[in-house]
Structure formats: C-alpha cells, structure tokens
Length: 89
Image (tube, rainbow, N blue to C red; front, side, top):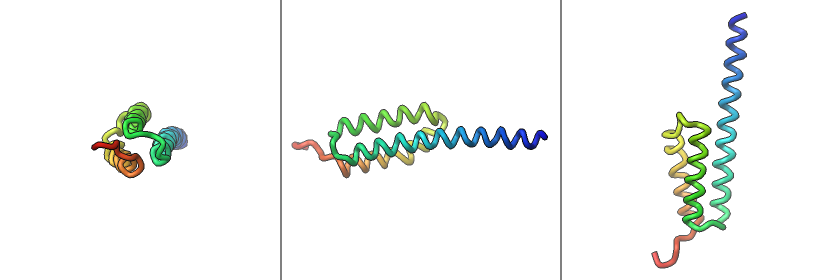
C-alpha cells in the first residue's frame, strides 16, 4: 500500500514539474516568435529576453544556470539575426 502511495505522490510531483516546463516552453517560444517577427527594435527585444529570464527564475529558480546555458545564446542569436542594428553603429 505504501508503494502505491509513493507512486501516486511521485506522479503528482512529475506532473507538477511537467506543468512548469510547459509554461516555461510556452513563455520562451512566445518571446522567440515575437523577436522573429521583426517588429521590435534591439532594445525592446533585449528587454523581452530579460523579462523572460526573470519570469523563468520564478518558474524554475533552481535551474537558472541551465536556463542561461540554453536560452541566453538562443536569444542573442535571434536578436542578431532578426533585429536590424541601429544605423550609425
């Protein structure tokens, strides 16, 4: 009986983690789509990426090093690729 309780508890914990990761994925995907839309200037895109990071820190506070490893370069690449540089630089 205890084993079944442990399995149920584990399933609940796993479901909660999956929900967090889904929310994070949706947040990041939405921001990436906005950047790729090309309607933001460089500063707005950078602020958006910073906002996503701040929101991620609320969702996965213990995984921010991993978040930075994965998404920091992704946002930088997208901003570089889809946002035109200001003239005169």
